[in-house]
Amino acid sequence: MGRPKKTESTEIKATCSTDTESTNNVSVTIPTPNDIEWTDYVLSLLSDDEKISDNPTTDGLRRIFEKALNCTMIESTSNVVQTPDISNEKRATVIHSLMFILNDIDTDSDIKYRTVSGSADVYWGNCDKIYRNHPVAVAETRAEGRALRRALKLRKVVAAEEIAKDIEDNVDGDSVTKITNNQINFIDVIAKRIDVDVLKLVDELNIKIKNSNIYSIDYNSAVAIITELSEMQRDSQNIKESIKGYNSSWR
Image (cartoon, rainbow, N blue to C red; front, side, top):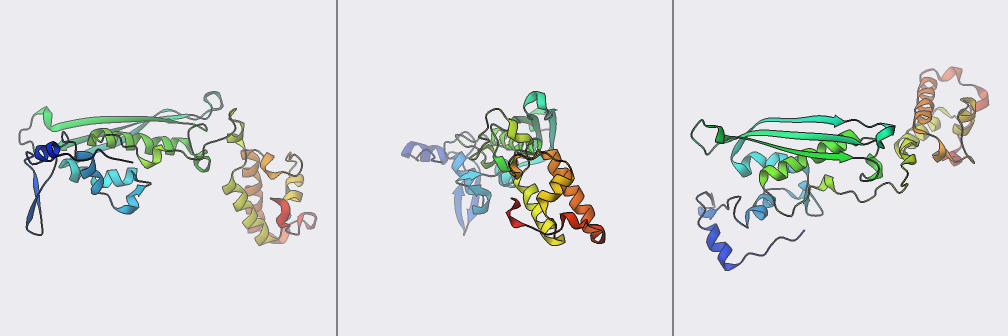
């Protein structure tokens, strides 16, 4: 993500800042949040693994927060104001609040204490498919990222977790209740380990499946399959002969 280029006037403005740090005995001027160089300075504090496609991660912003603002974090809390439900398209809404003290203000006045909040709502239409079954966790991370960005006064910057590249392609939201890839992989591992035919087990459990397509199974049915396989794994001596014989073509 591009940043505004420095000009002669902005460099003069930066030298008016009062904060400095010493690097190899050379005094380096630190920009203030009101300087145009501020955003670039904050991003420079992040390590390479704290950026994804040049967008800062939330945990990266959390790590450098106190250093960048010369503050002490007092509280960082999340409030879930909407939980996922069929009626709201499995949408979760979270507000994250930060409370911190500015260390460079000597007085004990209220101006030392700052509170900043950020909110986010997540559902199948704005979340990567891989995380679609965890909307509360995604919303919490996004809300914290927005609160950190706001407190840090970053310009034209979006946290990496706020960007969704592979969103749900079923606009009616029906597939949010379907079996997930993680469930399929887990089922396959256990079934292979205990030599069980997954499709025969599905039939044994009276679970509806269309055209032998495992992706037509709903999420709760997948949980039932996993539970049954886990029980069989604990007591492999009592697995029915009628469902034995692992077949990799089930998926």
